Length: 211
Ligand code: ATP
Image 1 (cartoon, rainbow, N blue to C red):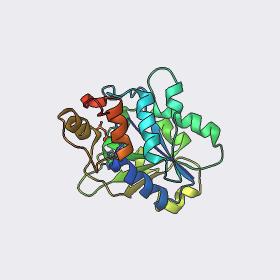
Image 2 (cartoon, helix red, strand yellow):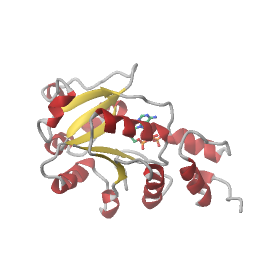
Image 3 (cartoon, helix red, strand yellow):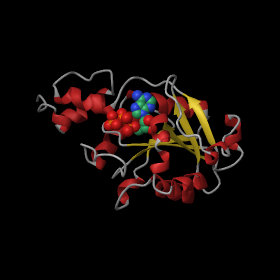
Image 4 (cartoon, helix red, strand yellow):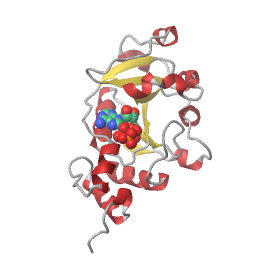
């Protein structure tokens, strides 16, 4: 089974990396692909360019077997719709279950996504939940797709919905960008190699690197 975690990763941080590792192990995935959104359709445009966000992801996962960066959205012009990404992954993996992992917040807004119902044609959807955050979708469309347990996801290649509690560290890219702009130290919120890259490239209003 192949897992997919999309996001802006502006920049990638330990909140992303912790859940990536956790779901890779929980679902016994052959690999978990982190897919940076080149041109996110549903939010303000990222501060760092797509190639730079991909570089930071690559630095972050270099020593983690089973986690890899997939840059296919960078090659596609226009808005980066997840349904197109899944369709392209399905062409690469015609017979394997694909698991798309999304946070509860994203799931609550899923019906605003481009061709959202077709996501299930290409992949299973796994919603990463955390205590205290309620699920706001209560549609028959979703109820019909609910898997009883995670073993069910291995039996078909797409079309199921599953809720998986995960460790959600209280870290956000927004807070990290703000800290950097305010000259605070973001250490221990994201990998040192990524912090170094941010400094070298003066991203997010960081100071000139000390030479
Ligand atoms: P921003 O603050 O810029 O909105 P973000 O930190 O929320 O960014 P995204 O790139 O938007 O990061 O997130 C990509 C995916 O990772 C989403 O599915 C999101 O739900 C999940 N995610 C983000 N932060 C965390 C976290 N701290 N713990 C677990 N999952 C997270």
